[in-house]
Structure formats: structure tokens, C-alpha cells
Image (cartoon, rainbow, N blue to C red; front, side, top):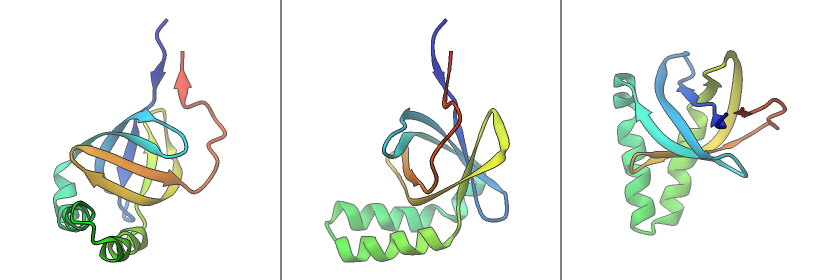
Length: 113
């Protein structure tokens, strides 16, 4: 039977779903294809600003934007465990992909066979 990696659902601090991440990498950071919901549109400008700063090597500006994004308290849940909140930092959404660093160890299985 093929192995599948469970998707992550990105939420804002109010519990609104802003998108889904289908991971291609789990350690040390979670990275994967990002599929936004319509609710992501209110956050798109800050992620576009971060992408612009990163692409133009404006590193101190990119750091400031990352801190603003961290302060927005986004979190993730998983398709198979919607009640478990995964806190993370350094969320970046660029070019159809998302990447973030979990703030806690993931104890349960991320891969199902």
C-alpha cells in the first residue's frame, strides 16, 4: 500500500481556514504545495510583501515582516486530527508553496501506510 503524508490545514487566530498545505518535506521544516481559500485574500498582501523583500535581498525588511506574520498567530491542524493545533513560526507563502517551522515536536505519525 502506498504511503501518504497527511495534509495540514492553515488557520488564522480566529479559526478561519486560509489554506491547505500538501507536504513534500516534514523536517526540519514543513514545506509543501499551498492551496489558498478565499479567506487567504486578506493576508495575501503581507505575504506578497515578504516575497518581494526576499527576492530583492532586503533581509532586514524581510525579518520585520516575518515577525509581523508570527504575531498573527497562525496555526495548523491536520486532516486526520482537526482538534490538534500545531503552533509554528516563520510561515512563508510564496510561489504556490508554504513553509513553516513547528514549535513543538510532532509525536504522532505524520505518514500513514
